[in-house]
Length: 328
Image (cartoon, rainbow, N blue to C red):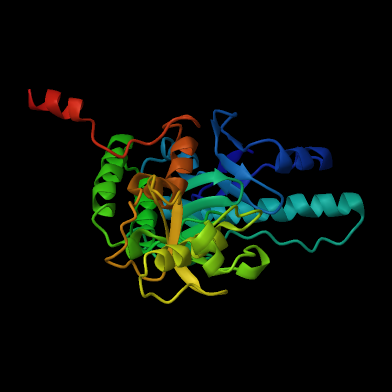
């Protein structure tokens, strides 16, 4: 693509040399190149959308026009892209001898953007289809990433989104590591209900063929092909019956909390509960719960940014040796 400077500080595209074959190549394979191919501004592209790094395009133009306002040029470039796609698609339709009915328009402008892959990203929207929010009043947009789900813990809902958006805005690896360690210390002090995820119990009789009386006499036995949510609900009911804790059992279709456990005499790796009772003497595995429930999406973000490899783990405790050396 070739940008041409005009008297009104507008930018137009040189589409005359693009024949039908090159339009196909351009829209599916080749990134946009500016000023002789020195900069690639395409972030990602798929069948019906393209994402461009406006800052890369703007910096090149600003070197030629130092006093150029960024938002003014953004809206000029928006018009340019709309005209480009309209003409490119018209050429394609004419080539195929069909009517051109597709209209490409700009959707969002982000002040910061972090992508895990096609249609999987977060971004701070400062302009949505011409409605300008500004850099201080941006709106969060999350697509294709289960950052916080209905089943997520209250702790995750409170802190995960802020952390990820702060990283997208430029939070360093060092400061992100530090915050994750701080969050873990906070995590361990929360009530179990605040750090546990939520699940729904399935139909127990489909998988559990013993009565509670039989289980108390012979043990739980194997959970053959039993969904995890059903298994941990039954573990709760068994544990309460075994220890004569007067709590209403988890029934089919009930929603309940669940949390990871350390090694215990019952062999439970996790347990469901509606409310954590003071008589529960099961050891909570805070590290596994934190990594599985809170750090899962953060771990993917670290991989995406190249901050760690797939097999590395994010540190959640301060290195005491480093702290010792700092004091010296």
